[in-house]
Image (cartoon, rainbow, N blue to C red):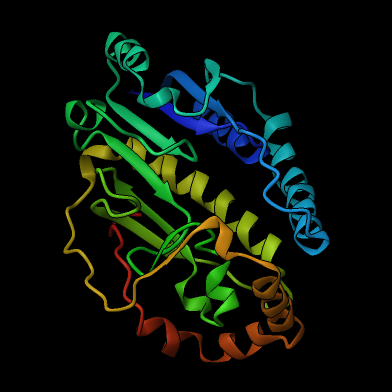
Length: 263
């Protein structure tokens, strides 16, 4: 039985994650810390607002099924953003003495906890590192017409953003009729299952040679503006996924990923 603590956020997908993980065999969730999102009025652009409204609607369709299906055994505690890096939280974590800390969507982890729990903090990055880092890492590959760079990366956490030692990766499962919201949610649901297997199989994780690449995009939240949204929508209208899927094996082969043989 793996005793774990979860650091996450409070969106529908994060709630579904903690509930799903807490119902897995051989996993005991000692406590979950769900950081409350700070509401930001970053812009009033109608196009962007509609885009994120659609994303939230799709998210509820995908993840409310999980929330309704399972009992919440996650021992959840809501907290303010940044709480997981405080001395108070560290004391609580030390008292609980977990085998592993599991991170998905919380604020950037800082402080002594990184050294105390070195190699015992797993994080999931929704994107393929080192190729796409920062924000929107499974959106910009579709803006740039590079679907082969969309996927999920599991890693150990270190002091750098999305730059820890990579453990396992997988690419997006795409269908020619997908839209950006379907792609993202399908990927996250697959991530839930893969994450649970990594938690239970922690002792089987094999160290892998890390990927070095000249391709290293780094995006901030503000980089996704109306112009990028227009390009994204145009790509999907042109049915660019169909063209990618025809050459998928060839294009994927050029983008190396790290994988555990037993997953």
